[in-house]
Length: 224
Length: 224
Ligand SMILES: N[C@@H](CCC(=O)N[C@@H](CS)C(=O)NCC(=O)O)C(=O)O
Ligand SMILES: N[C@@H](CCC(=O)N[C@@H](CS)C(=O)NCC(=O)O)C(=O)O
Image 1: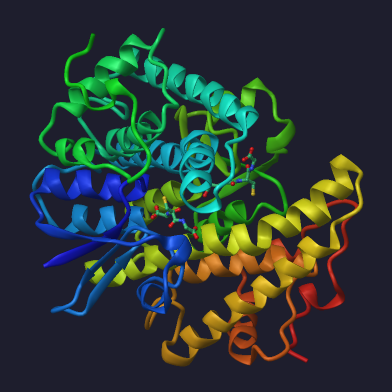
Image 2: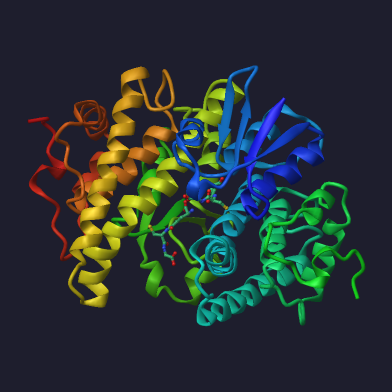
């Protein structure tokens, strides 16, 4: 069986979990903290990052969330997430990169640093200027998602795709860390809410990072 | 015809140029500096990053170097670069991500910041501590490439792949900026040298970023 090396607030691991669950691929979880991981973890992934997916019996290791998702897209037919023409697929991959890189860099990563790493490991107070900037960036990204949802059924087109999984994974971590203010983002909120209600999303919402408490609305399954 | 928005020292644009050239796809270049680009560029790519590939006649825009490369891999048969079984392809994509993200973050990006952006735009002196750290990181990455080349014909396996293009693109920019010391890395140097001699690489080596001069060995096509 596949074993996923992850930690609860790693957005890239969340994206992989959403995909595996939508595709019906069974896996077990193994907790790891990449910033204090030992040689054993580096032997699995020389990049030293989560997620890593490992199958000990088959001696098979997959690293990098996009490489992992492409692998399951190629090997499991159920719930296709990189679908359509080459142009459609390029649009799905463009948006996946936008959420994995820009949303992560602008919003999720600073929130994780200020509200998770500083609390749990560095034992420093968060920098409120950086937090304010991250939340401002979140609004700009939600504006873009609002606009996408105004023009399409799902973020990359008529069907649900990797772009939706990537965005929802980032937003869920940012929301856990108190970085998302839905006011003025009805389209994004409704899109995210539909997502939250899916069985694939439930285990993520139930999980906690010790010592860090999400806001009350984080796991709620009613809009108001 | 495709038009590539790029600047000469963007490693991701270089990777796309290598791929287009290997695949025989014609394109023209348009210079853009993402950090001072206007609304027109943001309209093409909301991420505000190079590379962007645009075909005005077909009204088609591709963004993000990995999405762009997957697109041409799917649409042009010549010179396959993401080839083999699903496991082989996952390995190619893992290494591509390693060079695009870790090599870039550890080596290329700090060199670009200290030796390109500071010189051309910020008009500040480079920070020698950061440069030293980037060059130390380069040695660690070259050690890993040495090890890959000891065990495989090309970085990801028996045939040349996107992983080689991604690594060569990053290294070429780091080398231009004086960040690569080949001493003790014979395997990497020989692998890179074979690459440098390919027709697809020549235009990159000939190109200059005004005001920044590469070291003498940068464009040389003999090993010693
Ligand atoms: N491109 C990678 C990014 C993974 C990533 O950045 N993971 C973070 C945790 S959310 C990590 O392991 N950081 C530790 C480090 O970079 O040393 C992917 O998509 O899997
Ligand atoms: N994941 C993107 C990364 C592109 C990227 O980071 N490009 C840099 C230039 S080398 C850029 O445009 N930076 C400007 C910015 O991020 O604002 C890709 O592969 O295309």
